[in-house]
Image (tube, rainbow over all chains, first blue to last red):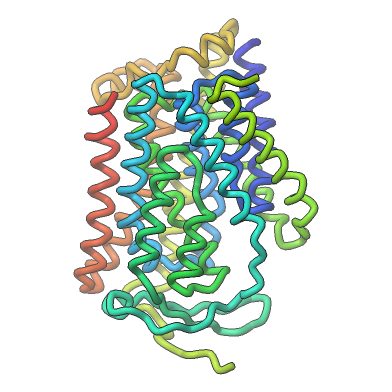
Length: 284
Length: 136
């Protein structure tokens, strides 16, 4: 296949993945990374490196609007990065060593399992828009991990204070490891920590997670890039396509009900995850 | 249910800080995408017969993953060097965003949060400049 044709196909795949991924809140990487391996024969470490670059482009595209609207809580986000960044450094370094040790099959199996593990979290219904107020812990008080935002849908001013910072930091470290190791955003885990342990409202949790995903991805991408696992001839068209798809998705998101899209997208992710596991196990 | 009211305004991170960080993101994103798209188009023009198999199996930027190599490639107008620069700008954009957070926390006299953001910056730079090249 001509390189030019490959670039066109990668852009088309990535636009679709970025668009649909942003609509269902899973990100395009969960489709792009296994698709690169299965459809285009890209080695798994380079596919993961491409995923990390893709997250950077996507989160930067959609994150700027959240920050401008002050929906991302920069104070809480920057505090939690103290856990996600070392996690991502560890995860990306592990990927490099697994690749060097010719354990790429194990990496494929682990990637497939992680993709399957993300699905239930993405399916979970989130009815509780405003988190219940809980008493902040000492660290939260000392660092003033609190905020207020105006909910556009209801016109209400919503105040919140971060509650249990220790378990949130633990989950964030794990989210960082997953992100660095597999080149995916891990937003499901980050939103879980923000919402369940810190008691941050859903909209703020989603926007803050998006803000953090870019910084976490930069940690993993930095290592994979410097180690030579980011091939720009693959990463550039995928990053551009996914960012374009995610931008369009973020623009049309408010006018869409995403239930039907979700039920199409999730089986695709599940099928790719199972195929990835089978490939890693050497099964047809 | 009565909404609890805490701090109405964060003086360390005023709305202007949020706006500036959003601008940092936009500028970084557009700069990197412009570099990546332009350099990719130039690469395809220069290598019209390039095949996908060779492109997937060999990374064209390995020689530019150090400062002298990158500077030389940029000076020579090598598209692969500009692809490397585009990726570097993309990776550096969130780091600059965290650095701006450090600036605001330090200016606001919040030593702990300034220390947290500084630690994050140092870890990011450690990964990019030390750990990555070390495991290459």
